[in-house]
Length: 103
Image (tube, rainbow, N blue to C red):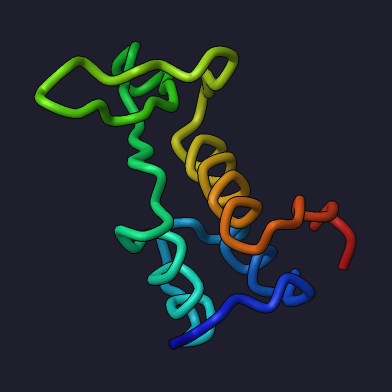
């Protein structure tokens, strides 16, 4: 099974630059792990203002409404996806993602 190397910040940079792809095979392998049933944390994005605002939420069982995650409101879909990526990265690797803005 593929495991994520938490030192591969280059892959996080790649995702941040192009969250909707195309992705390299290595990044796609990372995304497959992060988004897989075992690690995805049932995260979803809810559009709260059409084309203007999204909020990160967590899917609830038995058809209950999603639980909104306090403070996780974004004005771009890219920023919202980046936040979810970082949350999943930390959950899977056990390490907070270091700053990725430096090359």
